[in-house]
Length: 142
Length: 142
Length: 77
Length: 77
Image (cartoon, rainbow over all chains, first blue to last red; front, side, top):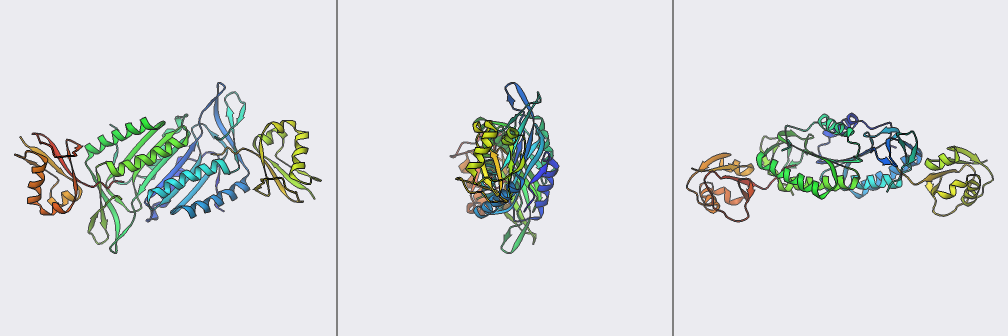
């Protein structure tokens, strides 16, 4: 099964390397990338300084594998990459990276958005927001 | 008016730098990036090796400025960046980079896709496909 | 022979542990009753149960070696 | 006093130049007639006309110093 979890933030250079690897795939005309960045939200006058991510890793990897297969069957894609942070990711850093590539742009766009929606609702990952007074709050996806 | 045209391909490191600059914008939760890559299409048994882009630069920049304003009014975005190559871009290299950022993902996704569609249909840029027998063909967007 | 229990997120915080074993529990309904007796705050939050990495849609019998995960609403991304 | 003409893409290739001037042309209709007489292949392709960077939707009068662009269908991206 493809590696999904990355300890700590997903760095811009990692994303650049991932993009560069596709230059040899000459049937690709369109890439859609989604990056989820940790926001410094204000909760009852406290600022979020980081999110600590935990996951039920085995189940999450299985679920993401199923999502991969279903999205590959539904859209005409050349490539798909999904990475999620575990551990601490500070405000302003990136915790989710979804990358789809296709011949024409419509497939890459639609697949990328659908993968992000499914990861947020179907994959057992939890984010604990760390506040600037050292308290914490379990994040809830809308 | 913001600089749009870049001579030659848009490099992965340029994209990484652009991503990294957003880490100080702590109200951003979602980035959507589109990358257009030159395909090595086959035309009557000849392979496309590169596209030479020309533009009516002054009009293109004005048009992209208008698109920027309209998209900012329509969606709740924190940031928007649009770059297009001029000159020669080889197969496998990137010629278009659209980057939208927002608090929640829906705005970034919808805005990014709409900008790409509008650039392809409304902005005076032309691509000449260079074939591997040294002939050429004017590209047509569908 | 016992079942293995995993707790995540807010559930793990409330029960003060993330993995333990239990014996003599016949089904998921009985498991929840046991847990909510020991940790009454669990009644106030909603959580899903997965048995062997599959979310259950109704109560099911538990067998020895089953892995039961207690999972609050997901918040990845 | 003359108008400035810019040609792009396939139009530029057909006429063999990308920028030149013309005088005594009263409107866009007359400009097209002139061009298509000199370069008959232009009749076989479709192109838009922009005057001072605005696409025209019907024929318009040309004034001295106007910049007229002959533009085939766009193919950026």
